[in-house]
Length: 69
Image (cartoon, rainbow, N blue to C red; front, side, top):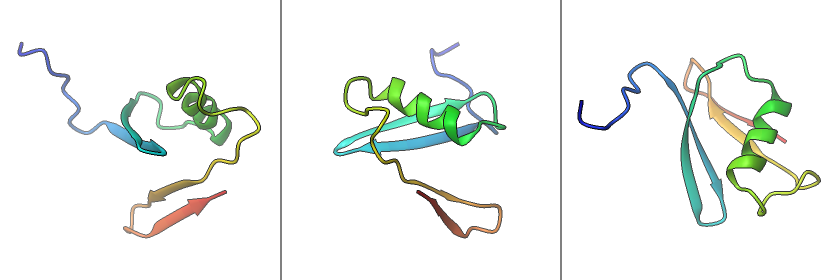
């Protein structure tokens, strides 16, 4: 084993807050919006507060860009 994770077929979230960009593997693809926001608060600890506005953008199965406020 070379110390790298096998992420083939896994859902990866790319999150950005200012200049800080993170890639996070998701183990539960049925994650809710609230759980995703909570995860982002943990990832960006101290930088993202519970009352901050969050915009989520993703590509759906058809390749269309979707934005959720």
